[in-house]
Length: 496
Image 1 (cartoon, rainbow, N blue to C red):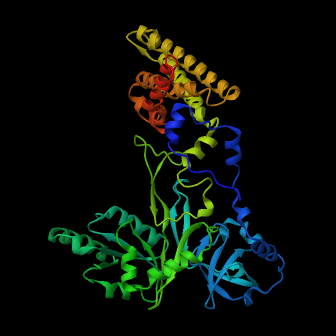
Image 2: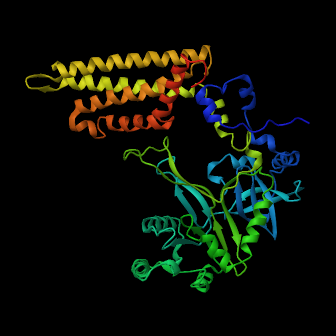
Image 3: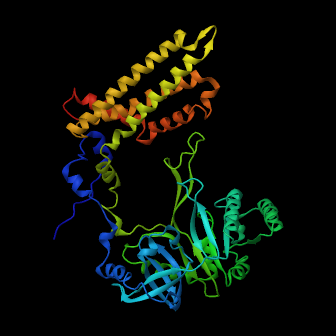
């Protein structure tokens, strides 16, 4: 039996000291392409093939089921008291508008097959018309709406007065989303037992505004069993989407009105198999007293973070909520705690790609600055003729050319000698390129005057973007530390 290598430790220190050979042939072998299709069993591939063999069936005669979970390759559909593991007919899957949503009513064809865990398999042949669709704005595509739930009747918006504090703006946005999808919003203030008298008065006033708009409201507390009967009545015989920030007590509330749901959730999680089906959407849970709730645990992009006030989507960073996320063991490439090793092994030329683009940004800023100075007149002559601006133009050109050549040297060494031999040049260009570009862009902003700090010239946004590079690929201080140690190593017999 082939033994796995033990987990490597202190990878960051080894990388900075130059001991980690991150681009050797063994790394390329380890970090080969990882295809999810390689994890499909033979019986599931058979199901996909048989899905195309019956194009002449009577679709209206097929049983109707409801989608309770959607995965990347499969979905779970409940029909006739059984839960089927389903694939979508290939001809239908090619159409983006036919993508399945949790809550969809579908017609399915039983394949007469079962997977290795005994689950019946079927093919989704048709998606029936949707009565409601809940959408959210796609964080990476601006204003484009991304559907997440179908055929729900209402949305329970849960907030807590304390731990965490209520966010009225978030509640308002959720109300707009619910009404936009034709869902009836219900605002539920939880954990009222933690609030003071003054906080309760302010909450009652806010809830009064919602009630004036015709929006139902609830106040609940699980420890004191306040409002649980009213919550149960509000959910009875309805399909309800749960919404709210992490920590407000959504799961606690639902488990309080149906205590066995926590156990059922665990069973369903285990039911999803051996990590082959990565969850990509919400899940529908039936309630014993009638109706169902749809929860959306997992990775949620709450918002794209602005950079100096600029919307940096889709290229920037986001505020991401990891709520009850489970990573299947089959998805691990090398092992727990080895993410840094994987990143270093796969990065390759990307180490200084941003430095090349930074040199280009500095070149554009210099061009804009020069044209501006040649077109504006002050104190009887063009701005470009003033000695201070002649000096700045000259220094900008010198700095850009020095940086360009350092970037070229680093890239050449990476190609010919490898990243380890070029680690000094890589560290230096990561420090030099953003610093030079920021200096040139700042001078260009100064040359444009008030226009330079607006969005008209494009310089303010360029400055904001380039400024992030002094942090994004490791702070300057880390790179300078590596440069210093490599320099001192030349004059000592041991690593510094």
